[in-house]
Image 1 (tube, rainbow, N blue to C red):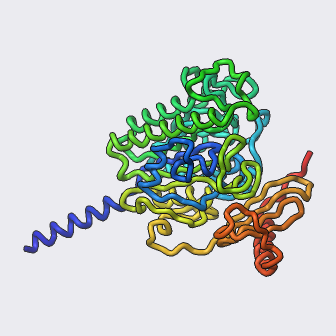
Image 2: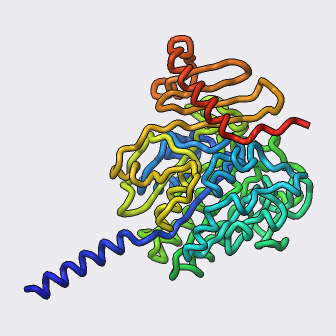
Image 3: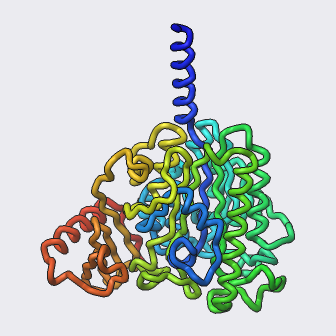
Length: 431
């Protein structure tokens, strides 16, 4: 009898330890996707069965936010776990800014995962610096396949200046194929190679960012379609559907290799949708701090830890994904991070604490910049000398300004914003 008790206790403890084992991590980041462009976020036009299934298998976050309304700052926030203003990333890296980049000393995500024994890889868009000292390998990614800039021709793999832009680690390479498919293929190969050890893989698809080149119409020249002014909604739909297919292939590979049960999967868009996107029911889009510019699709799946088929209106921001990954994979969150581990909250194990989230859209030496604050269900926005206040629980489209009806709330949020901005480095002067 005593032996049976000991065996039972051993099996129980073993199961508990297995459940508590640090997970593999798959972080999927997409680019310029509209809030309403997935079936699981209300789209009737675009078929996204694989992402819809991911939402059913985990938690769909309805109030998730990018750290900025443009690419580079949100990506910097993911790497550092901090507001992008704190590391000098108020705005994107432009094509000609070859000497600017995210400092290795500021990043924690891939570096800490690698130090904890994880194999690390990034496939896709980087947009945090062109030089090797700013590149993915320097920041802790063992393997990189993708491009360092803002965008890339899906077929010719040249950038907006006409220069070759596809890299494997630090070397330019030539590889034929539609870029979304090439990134998917690399992700599948990484999983095959690393199935027997802990891994952290970020798949940073450039889709559906322009150029709006659909996979069934090869354009090897690029001149006819490169740029934000080209393309149609029908082209955009095909790009998103191919993106969904690619994500489905990566998720299926996890299943085939029997890795899905111990893999934390996180999906995030880097900022609000652009010209061809559908941000319904939000107002405005990319380049603005209205909800359409910063509220984004986000999903979390971790079988046995995170419930399936659940929606959460918990306000979260990009840096929370950083903290969540590091806490559950390495056991600790580095000091001074602005993100929080959201797993206890979305799993129902802890009650979420009240939070205040901030954004700043700089216009140096100008009074016409934007500021925004999410405070509970309140949304404050300063836009061109105007202060506006919205109750997002009842006005997700930000149509009814309540600033004059709630001056006390306005004052409280304004004071929080001033305190936050005071803690940041000074805005650079315009040249």
